[in-house]
Length: 490
Image 1 (cartoon, rainbow, N blue to C red):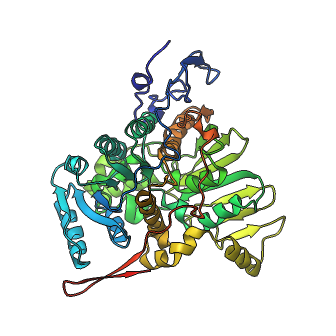
Image 2 (cartoon, rainbow, N blue to C red):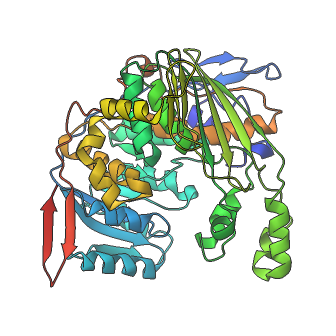
Image 3 (spheres, rainbow, N blue to C red):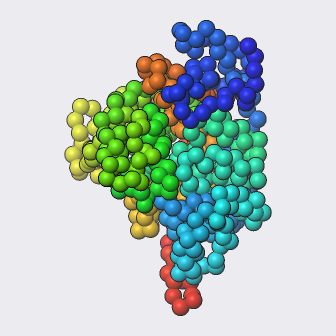
């Protein structure tokens, strides 16, 4: 059976209900063909995706000023606006949220900084299209609920805008391909805002790996272990329309990118190696369903969410790469455990591990002493941290990593440089979720991971945290006074 991939991969977000099959998930192929992806599947189609343009290594024309339109001013958007006012060459051009009061609050924050008011878009579900259609916008920065990420990113690229979109960039296999195809066709950047790639220890270990400290990388582990129930997922005054709780009916790794992104950069995934196949397993749900049922007995607000089947507490997914490396990714947001993204790197000469704290490095069979660790940290601190690390800690955003991410994005756009995280990374890191759902629903059978680079991973260049180009964008300290804006350069 020959078919067009765009018609074939109509995959819903609920993979466990049977919408996603092994036949639906296919690797990139330069020619149409047939294969057996799993023993029980007699026929399957490898999708035909001819790469229109390689966005890895793509340098768009430099922009002296980056006029940004922000969509979504709830949990993440206001912080992004506040960080961006500290970066040279940025104009806060437009703000959007369907709730007008959120836009008004951020406008007040801008005014307090002494900056001109941005254009406002609010009041309706489709107000965001006004930002994308505005010819005076260069970059659309998306901080909305997950279901809106791909539709907004695609519309923005179609409207001639570069895109920065919060994690995950896509919810389904089809959405991941849609992002790739649109970015290639429009030649507009689509960066997933995976801030953990810019955390201090992650950047340090990336540079250590680049310099060969760990030898050949063998294995990596990442996670998102974060108890989000009380004060977050269950909070009726938290996420709008309880969207985060609604997502938890999907059984798989719903939030893989925080732990996965830094590991992929260290392993040069999409840039010298690629994911081959993966398998996934979830525990039962021992918490969410019973807790929601109890809340519903106490408060009628929760009744629509009671009596449902929620995702298992712990999901563990395993990936094997074409070079024979392995990656473990875990997800648990409903167990009473200390926060952890693990971030473990293991090689032929040594290893590093971030959690449980303190951060540790071993060269051989013994952990380094604090003094030995400090000496290596001084030696291997990458240039990006030397340039903006201290100011990032002062400005903030998850300890500074949010600011480093935003600064690097703007620096690349101002200098016409390739992004550290491109659309292939956004698609790949996000697609782990629907693939994990399929595997969980099929007794943890393995499933092929699509190659969104269409083979160009063999020649794409790895990320370099030492900034061989660019790095000249200034960090601004903004102090508001009596209608005066004092900007200090650092």
